[in-house]
Image 1: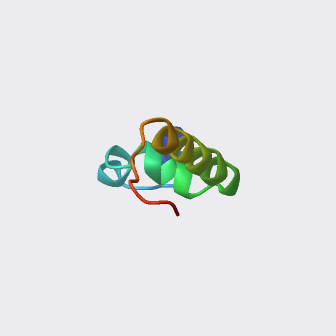
Image 2 (image 1 turned 30 degrees about the vertical axis):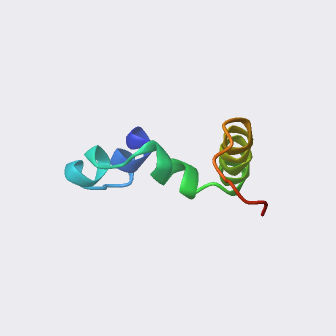
Image 3 (image 1 turned 135 degrees about the horizontal axis):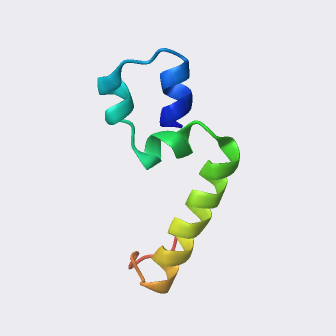
Length: 52
């Protein structure tokens, strides 16, 4: 992603500050995968005390 940003002319500071969550946020498929994993961990470790 950072290489692609460099090719597009993005500033060095902006490339440096880009996180994995930023990359996930730009891809619909990755968002679905990420939310599924977070839900799975939340259920496994009983994050919620009430049912939702």
